[in-house]
Image 1 (tube, rainbow, N blue to C red):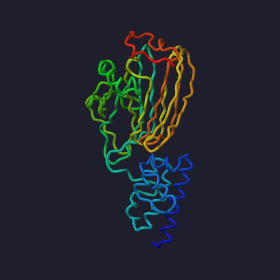
Image 2: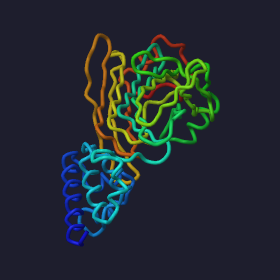
Image 3: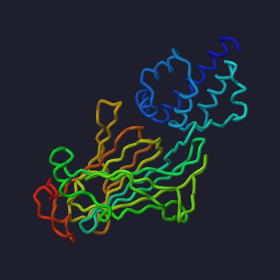
Length: 327
């Protein structure tokens, strides 16, 4: 292929990339953050100073979800460099999977409810295996912090009142239509932190998630109100297409809820206020985040107008630092 043909193919790739970046409402910096590249690299690609690479094309296709249009442009460009045969077995619409075990979270639902003095937490994740090797386990964690703005106070508090497996009542299931209990084991535990590996296994029968397959994993636990803290955070460690955080509080607690998004690649924090929906005796807040950024953190905070109502139905705990803060 001559140089002009290669330049034309590279320009077509850039046009497709830029079109879908605009379609998804992402800046170059945001796309860089979600794909793990430096913002200057994305800018150089779009300005034609660098030529696209296979890894870059894979990652932007995964994030922008163009229906493989971006990848198709890359296949044509790669062919101009004498690599067309390398992709011939894939077909014009196939994106080669990344080597190894890789997961895509197509949808995550994080739910927290206040019930009788306990926070009931449930997480539901729709998983898609996009790598080349079967997946046999998935790691989750329980992480609480009663006083996140005062680490020394929190450390002292949790050392006196550590999280225990008996009280959290952890459980997990796998499957969308007929979920079955999963085996799990604790791999790390501290006073306010528990790391758990979920085994893709039901009743001793392995259920690996093979390349291209999908499944749904649910897990749940509970923590006393006086021990938990007034916040819930989701860290985006895997590519995720949609995140929903939902909070349910008794109306009598008169909650105030707000959220924020932070990223290691961003200098500012975006404040987001979830919208309440009132039900019978309950007020619900829901924060939907389409295409959350990789390695970003999404945290919701709340305060009670009547903190005593948050302890209704629970065994009262009298240590002053354990009482929920008043707005």
